[in-house]
Image (cartoon, rainbow, N blue to C red; front, side, top):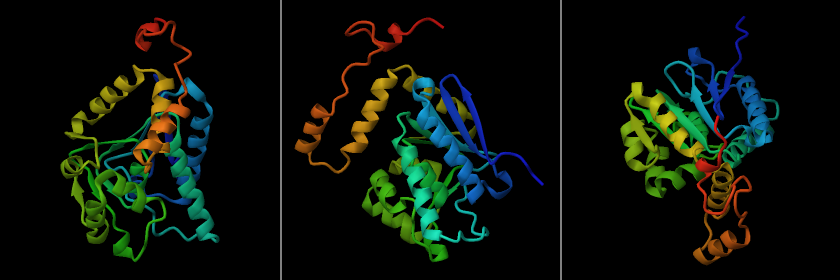
Length: 252
């Protein structure tokens, strides 16, 4: 019996890295894996500024092949699906920026996982696809909503109705991935982006992210009003007005 955790967590340098850990199944998602993932997300949600950024990735050579279709269905399938959907929504709404680091397969439910992050950075080995249609399924984790917001309606329909796979380079070209690099440069690229983000105010990062998501779909005048009326103001950690946050941080 394998007692290894299905989610590996490593906290270092203000970054929480969560690794889906079923490499023998290309990190396909079953209920036990999702329960462990939910526990970590709820914990990160509660820790405040101790964590400044979250990275989601997969063990072995793949990000996630989607749902494990061999797992027996939950007795309350719709209720469990709603729980899963709400946790992915919580992932998106975390104060911390979230990066999906993708190698290999990122299919269907795995793609919905990645789309719940703020950034997708992939290696050249990455393959992205929505294969719900191959199995007679329809999405329940946000594919129909998040994919079109990333790539536009026409490309989202193309991906969802053809079920074909796209390379990492193609994903970057269509805006699905922020960056595509050689696999051996993927860790460095994620570290580079993480350093840029963490070098800025965590207060500003959280509030900028909140404003972007809260005003999605607003008319311009409504969004402008929301930005003004829901403005959280200056970072209280700033020592003086106009001083860059990096300069305000204590050494070490």
